Every structure is written in structure tokens, then in C-alpha cells.
Image (cartoon, rainbow, N blue to C red; front, top):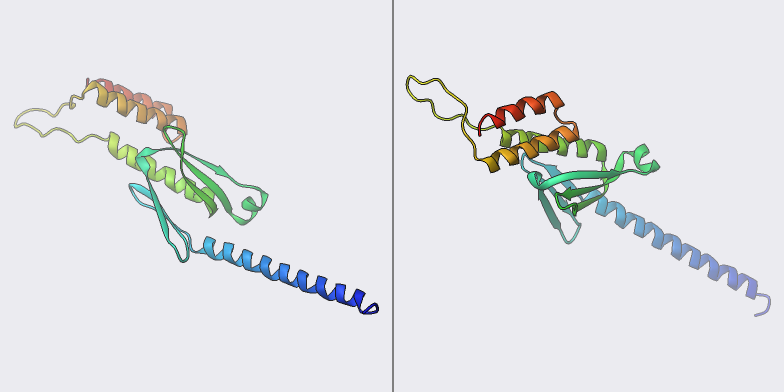
Length: 178
């Protein structure tokens, strides 16, 4: 037994090392499979996320409730094109967290563009029905509606989606409807 002690210790350490390697590889495989099974969709009204392999979980956020999105990318994320995206509401609470999101900057840009299109559609007001012989004029709005529309326009201007000149022109148009 005395001559076999170093060999027995070496064999035990080899098996422990092999076991740790197998566990580590299995853990990495599980993370990759879970990441690969995630789906993200942007519609004209919502951002949806479906995740899970055996147990599916889906979450969606309304574009009109989204206030901002915070993107974080480390060095490897910038190299390989992934990042972490937190979607915030007006209350500055994170509604949903997208971890290791593939092509995260493009996803964020697409999501904010869809939000901008939705807000533009919401601000664009239907014209009143034309009366026979009357020239169409601006539709009158309630002060609360004008305030909400101006707040949406200010957010668009602050995010860089519209220029200050566009904001001023639309603001004058909205104020004329009071």
C-alpha cells in the first residue's frame, strides 16, 4: 500500500479533474441550449420574448409603455455581437431583461424605431369629416389630449427621433387645435 499511495492519489485527482471537466462542459451546454431556444419578436405594438427548453416562459411589453432601453455590452459582447438589454417604463422600473441578446444594438434600434412609428401613428390625428361646401379646418382637441401629444413629441425630440424644428412645427399645429 505504501508504494501505491502516490499513484492512488494521482488516480483520484485525475478522476476528480475529469468529473469537474464533464460537469463544466454540461453546464456550458445547458447555458448554450437555453440561449439558443430564446426567441424575440417586435411587432407594431409589442415586444415579445419566449424562453425555455422544457418549460416555456413568454413575456411581452407594450411599445407605448416603454420609456427607454438600456443596453450594456462588455468587450466580448461588442466583439461577438451580444449584450444585455433592460426595457424601462415611465416609472423607471425594468419591465423585462434580455440577457445575452444576439445582435443587441440592432434589436434596440429596431424596437425604438417601432415605438417611434407607433407614437407617430398615435399623434397623427384623423381629420374631421368634410361638410359639403366647407373647407376642411383643424380638428379641435381637449387640453389633456394636446398635453399628452406634446409630451410624446418631447420624448421623441429628446431621444433624437425628430428634430427640434419638427417638434416646434407639430407643437404649433397642436396648440392651434385648442
